[in-house]
Image 1 (cartoon, one colour):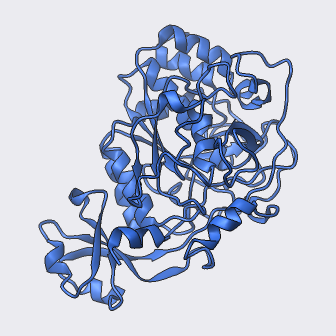
Image 2 (cartoon, one colour):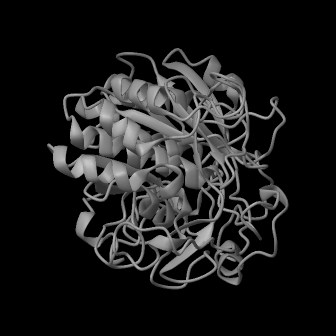
Image 3 (cartoon, helix red, strand yellow):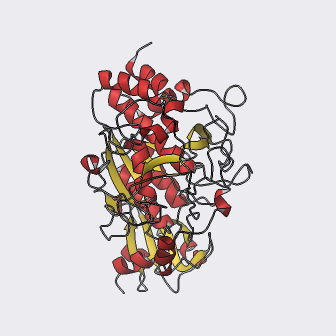
Length: 435
């Protein structure tokens, strides 16, 4: 079997995109015990070799390694192993398929700096949500805007007005996820060429639906169609690291991050996460940070046990996002911890769905919940900030997001909300130098 084909079957760590929806606005379901799985996802899962494996399972014969500086893969592997570069040749990281390989073998290999196994991870199952509607909510003429309570909570309308008057450039956001429906009328005009980590060229397709929903939250056009995104003028780069069943791989995620690190994206948005750390992910994030990218990730949906940690949210260099509800309470599913940076609306969030059948509960538009929905809200606002002041570096954008946040919970930073809830108006004021 050729390696590209084998990669399309592989699913090494399917990073958990938190996509379960709520039954009501104020009583979200536990995202790890959500309702019956959508039939489309059932069908997709049947074609996924790893759908029956458990979250975190090691895939036999699959390894990620990093070569030592100056070492060559041809010297490291001489027994017919299948090898694929992760993030290009310059990262030194490789996905290795070897029936005879073991971690101890790789540790003893003088050409290898480090090695780790591949593991499986799953997306949480989805359930239908109940969108909130506020007929008094005014703003863009997009017909579903009245169901986007998050923008009222974030003072987005006022922030957009100031941003429009002070816009200097278009920013770029990479959505690292399940792909994006690039023909969606709320997204089509803003899509830039992307990347499929499985080598299938499917980054512009999203049969799962999660990536399309995240893209709409971050940057849906204000075009009198559907919904309004946080940064309507930002361009979107779709980076597919999760397959249509909702499964993905550590290798694919690391590859996608490293690819985006070398792209023109200003912001990398990752609504995904796994229960174990990965040196490959850590190295890919470090490359993105080195290249001046703001890397944003969802905290995860496993609730309030501080010992439960999701990666890459807890990976060094990542700006991690929790979810709050319409009443400014931390969402029941939103994970907590010392690595949380900020919070954003994440319950019953109305956004784009693919225009065709997918793993989402409807076509075109709909409402679901999770820290997955909070993450692209922060990414979109970061893009809006960058468009107002293109000279800002990633750390400066982080600083603006934190200083402009509305403090929730105990005074100052706390493990539930981080710095607090995002505020679009206050952030744009800081970015533009307005008082």
